[in-house]
Image (cartoon, one colour):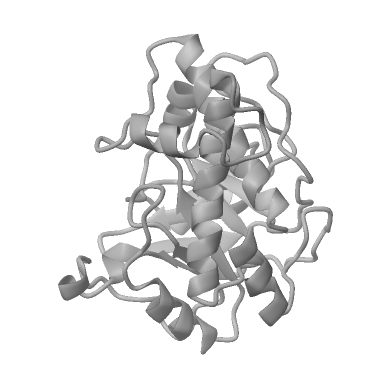
Length: 276
């Protein structure tokens, strides 16, 4: 957490996990990450948020944990010139064998059990993201943990045991951001959340929900329903072929610590993914 401590020392603190910030309704903006980087940096050169944007959600990772968006500092700098709230999102994934070996003790859990090792590896994913944000001078008001399928680094989903282990990794990430003093929430969609976590219910954790490639009205409708994990939907997303769009849904309370594992309900209806 040294990187986070250095960052916090040089910036005004963002909302803390115990706070209940007053967030105006109907803020609208965009989320961006490596696809908005120039082609020479490995992106697609997609457009950045327009000057009219009221919110920016910046992807920290380059598609997988323990990687960095190659133009993170540039995107953070551009967003800093706009007087808008800035959030971050971080891709989560099940650790590879090498990542598990290298990070099995990099967290607060005993490393003598597989449960502890997986939780610590998730914690290390958060620590790596915090370090990347610190290097870019980025102190977001919120960090969204993005939980989706990844072909290059897949989540195991073939059994309840796998889903339980996935929850340990995600729980470790939540604890990592909590310990860094950063509010956190979850981005996913119903089908992916059901496959990866067994429809883990976390009613106290804020949700960023996507309507997929649809309309603002469909995204706005997400605001009045429980999210894929049972949490309050704070951000709603929709997208087209050019941009991802987001709108705030109102006020909410940040969760102080990850919710313990609970009995799991049946999977919910499918939705659509977006992030890379």
